[in-house]
Image (tube, rainbow, N blue to C red; front, side):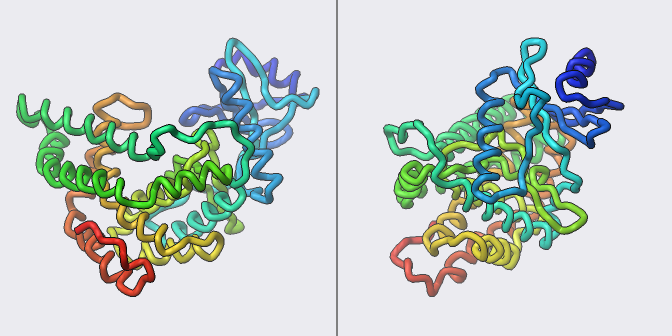
Length: 342
């Protein structure tokens, strides 16, 4: 954070700032009006978007999200030094832990409440001409990048522990990714996407555990609205389940309990649950982390990627057992006409 902004903030927000410390892409401010979070954007449109979205969600009754503070003139965007800043009230909570099933269930219920509120949002975004979900575009690009990485490693041989792990897992991962990408076009995803655009449905699209905050009183908040956009809400559930299942060691019971917790708040059809389970065949944890670190994306570090890759390798059989359990899990479902990807 540019410290020269502090006097300007004190004047605009009529407060005293006693200290500031950076974390990830924000700064924590200690003021005489409480603890705040400062976040800067390069484009004003992005700052406008998150403020508008927060107000929309709160108006719809979803209060467990970020709340923006206005300056003395009522403005919630503070231009300074070529950037556009927002200030949020800090939420007194800890990050959710996907290794804790209790945390997972609370986060699932919060996600469901967000999904309930994030409907009928006024938007002028046109329906994609090809009717193709953005999720599949992202996955196809991620797979292509992963294949290039494995080809480069093959050419020179593994140079470190991560590259050894990649080569040990590459064949199965590429097979699984190609298989589900082909099968996805036979799923009713276009209808799901059309419904999302027809009803003005929003998805968060970054439901990592650090974006769920649990307070000492037991409330759970969903934060960081930067990635929210018009999309199938199914993408959130696939991402959420994929991330939590790794730390839950791919236990089928954890999937069932998380789905049940979500469904208590927001209805899921059998077809939607089936699609979530099938789309989990895409090895997103491995491909996301590997392409993230090789692409030098912010937040991806060699040590953490090695740790996650080692976990995925250790749990390979457990993951396959979870995916095979779909036939048993949905044996009595009314949509048995769909064929499972074996």
